[in-house]
Length: 158
Image (cartoon, rainbow, N blue to C red; front, top):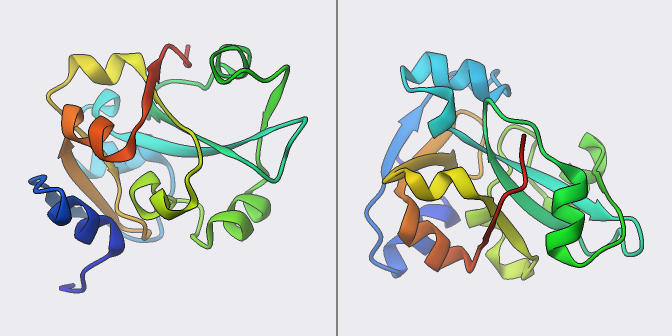
């Protein structure tokens, strides 16, 4: 597969080196994907679409490791909302235009949604994130990813 995705164009525009990894596009579970790619689950980050209860049309993106669970209370606190909830799969797909399992913060920067990256990522030199299409992840330097996404780093998982 040689097509360039917007996520790759964005990284190239910012001179961020990345490595593309591929896996069967039937897989959506980040922990299974980590296993297929032969990397620890804590290195594969899933992008979750989260909706503030007071403003569901302006979602947030939360990036957390495959082996962790989003802490909705913590995310609500750092994002300044009383309460947030996970978007239903169909809502997430509708809002992002991407399929669940292929939702990528890198492919959604044009939406200017707030992006939160879980703090443990900062301890890793590289993490893997979705390329914006099922079956493809990008291995990206964490610091550069934070810069390109304008992501806020916070403890948002357990």
